[in-house]
Every structure is written in structure tokens, then in C-alpha cells.
Amino acid sequence: MTEQIKKNNNRLNISALKGPCLAKELSRKVKSYTVVANKNIKIAKNIGSIISTNFYKTEYSTDVRGVEFSSAIKNIYSMIIGSGQGNNTSSALFRKSIDEMEYLIKFFKGNRETVYGLAGLGDLYVSAVGGRNSKMGEYLGKGITFKEAKKRFMREDTIEGADLAFEIAPYVLKKINNKKIPLMIALLKAITKNKKLKINY
Image (tube, rainbow, N blue to C red):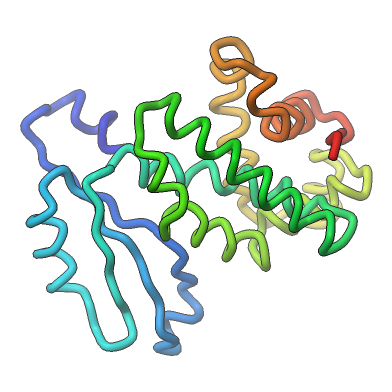
């Protein structure tokens, strides 16, 4: 994240570019959207004017923290949505995931509105309907443990949500009110302790 990079040089002005933009679709010039975030909205818009095309559109935000955080945790929630037993269940998990993302963004001092933008809801949708994280979630929803699913079905795939789960679990489990984020807690425990995923719908 930009805050980690700035620890070594706090004078750096770093922008973040996030959002629901699948490379394979962009390469075919399918109309795609992304969000450029910078504390200075003019800088964000200047970047957008450079990289935008008639098929690659940019939106803008000053909420750098919220944009980066939303784009990261959507990988975890796309696994949760993928674990649903069907579209009815997954749609309910989608809605509950947004609630938890909103709580977490506010906890980490981002703007709640960012969750409903391209880096939040938009990116979550793309990941949930066909990404690697969602596929792993499908296996977890069938009662297969993470290690078994990774070994048997996704040995060569990078599962960003799982990598993030191992990284943030120690902090989240101890520092955040677990009752406010039951979906994430269930996923973190399933991944980091290699247990079957148990979600109370």
C-alpha cells in the first residue's frame, strides 16, 4: 500500500489505480473502467487524462486508503461469495459482504462511499463471478479444506485472498470486533487453520 511505501520517504505522492478491469477483456478492447486515487484530485485526473481511451475509462477518488483497502479485501469476500450453495445463497453473501466491507473501511478510516465504487462493489462483482478466489471459495463451500483444494485443483494458481488471509489474520482476529465481521472471521479461520469453512447464513 502507498502508506507502507511512504514510510521510507513521506514526501512521495503516490497514486493508486484499482478496479474491475480484467486483463483479458482489456486486451480485446472491451469497455472497462477503473478508479485513480490520489489525495490531490487534480493529480488523479491528470493521470486519468493520460491513460484513458475510448474503451478504458477512469473515475477519480481522494480516498487512497479506502480504494486500496477495498480492492484488497474483495479477494477474501469473493471466496466467501463463491462458497455459496447456489445463486440465492451467493447473492445473500454478496450483500452481507458489502456490509462487512463498509464496517472495515470505516474501522481503517477510509470513506464508506468507496465500498460502493469501482474498487469495492465493482471489483467484488468481477472477482465473485469468475476469478480464482471465487473458484477456491467454491471448493471451500463443498467442504474441502484449503490445502487439499490448492493441491488437487489449483496447484499452479495464485489465490490472492488466501495470501491476504495469512497476512492479516493475526491482527484481525485480535484487534477487530469479530462479531461485526463473521464472514471474514469464518474465512480467515478456515484458511489459516486449514479447517472446513463454516458460515452461518
